Amino acid sequence: MYYTLGQRQGLNIGGRRGASPEPWYALKKDLERNVLIVGQGHDHPVLFHNTLEAGQLDWCAGRAPPLQSLRCAAKTRYRQPDQDCAVELLEGGRCRVLFDQPQRAITPGQSVVFYQARNAWVAASSNWPPIRPERLRRRPLSGLIDFN
Image (cartoon, rainbow, N blue to C red; front, side, top):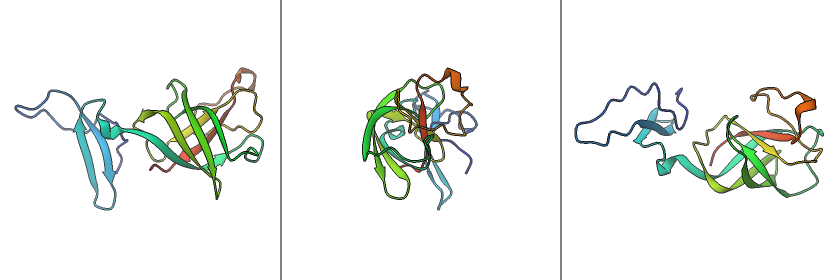
């Protein structure tokens, strides 16, 4: 099923007589039943989540930091403002992220990139635009979202 959570375009759902004029958005996917759940409104509550789990972490230093958790900023979209969060390192090269504020349309398969100034244990996701080293003031670390 090729829809992104929070997607508005391409759903081919028109208005309904007597219903809200707000646009429709992809809210959830049930892949086993091949069902797309949609709802009206850009800020539909189903689109917002405080947590995510990520795997396939790519550390610039070649290994995870010697911590079990850290405070930093994160992005799940390229042009998104930094979002404060706590990152807990899990077994098997995975992590759990708890955002201070709920995030809209966190989607499985997206990259999540963490930023923390002056740390050498950081990495960048290959799904994001390349960053020239001389322009890196904050260094990102990243992983692939599984979604909870």
